[in-house]
Image 1 (cartoon, rainbow, N blue to C red):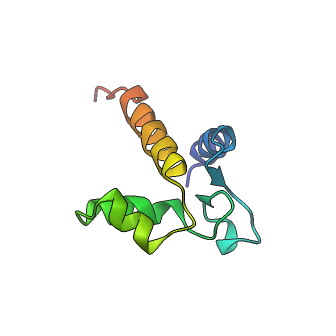
Image 2: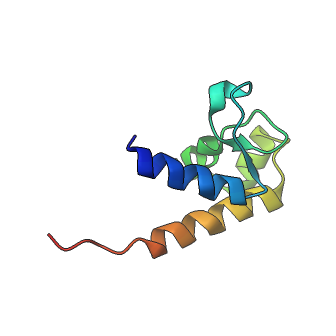
Length: 86
């Protein structure tokens, strides 16, 4: 990962209450705060066509509020990135 990208991601994750990054939990993988559930699990589940309710049944320690906060912020990030002209 490029250093600037890593710094940007750390800053964004630091602003979200729903995400924690701790080297002692899942080797520093971004997880839902207060859990050992990687945030990537949510996006993997959605990418496979699973519903949020399915995700919550699989990972009951993640709250609906946490998941929605992460989804909203991911959407903001996608919309904030302007396509670069080549």
